[in-house]
Length: 348
Ligand SMILES: Nc1nc2c(ncn2[C@@H]2O[C@H](COP(=O)(O)OP(=O)(O)O)[C@@H](O)[C@H]2O)c(=O)[nH]1
Ligand SMILES: [Mg+2]
Image 1 (cartoon, helix red, strand yellow):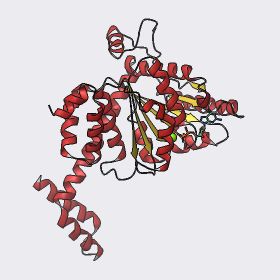
Image 2 (cartoon, rainbow, N blue to C red):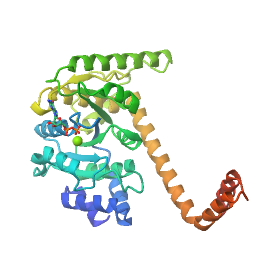
Image 3 (tube, protein in one colour):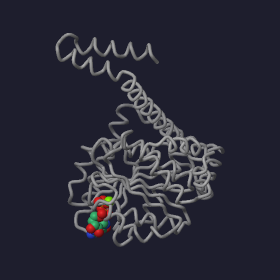
Image 4 (cartoon, rainbow, N blue to C red):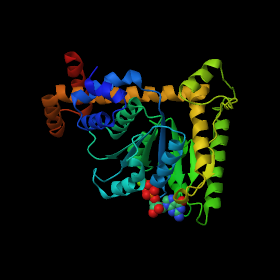
């Protein structure tokens, strides 16, 4: 095992930070450490926090950290910023909001810029989550802006996705447009101190019930409840008390909670809802199936990336020649691709 990997497993923050940089640089050492760490991952609950800019994601994340720390949980935070580099303005804002936790050795906060991720942002985020998981985080919070395909993809790396909305921002419409409704597991209507929170809540309720009805119409919803002894054991291995836990319903309906992040109001209810959803992913058949489906997506996506890289490297010159040939109309693009794939497969 690489020295950095064993140091991360003993909970050394500096080693973890070092490996995150190696991953950023796509160094071979980074991959080696990730391989070493993988068998020690899978324990953390990955919580995605997403929503429009200004909805209050960072403020809420700060409150969630606070609530989890009261439960004596170790926390990792990855703040993905859509534009700024590491020292950029928006990240500075996030940093300040969460700064009071930065001195806590049980809290590990990292910002990521969305640009310059050769292997794709969601892969970088996933690798970072794994490092924090291996470092010993009980919960890894990934904050992303809920716009754009890259960001949406990151929410798919989470076990639980919290969608943060605020009244009067037209967030409901945005959420539908961005496809957030499908990935949302829990809704927070933040800034409930402002006018319009109740009407936003009703809008979201309506959207959820409409979504549910169309699912029923399609016959996609199955009503069976599975809750075996092994599920309870699994839950307790994840530090979830199953003492007061009765059966978790097989079908998950996203709950909606109002909160005021700046004042720390409504946070406990939100944390309880998030914890219940975590149990859903562990204890129900649907939850476990979703975990497996997402793992399948990851493996396929990684394979696609690796193949593209291998093919582009192997066919370097032929690729350029093919473009010229197509441009000169000596070759149609379909035949060009067929030739390239054939050549690549012969060589592989
Ligand atoms: N009135 C009110 N303002 C809030 C609340 N939560 C956050 N804010 C403010 O909304 C602005 C954006 O918050 P921020 O957490 O940076 O949002 P993000 O872009 O979604 O991460 C900041 O000025 C916060 O102080 C709230 O519950 N009520
Ligand atoms: Mg933010």
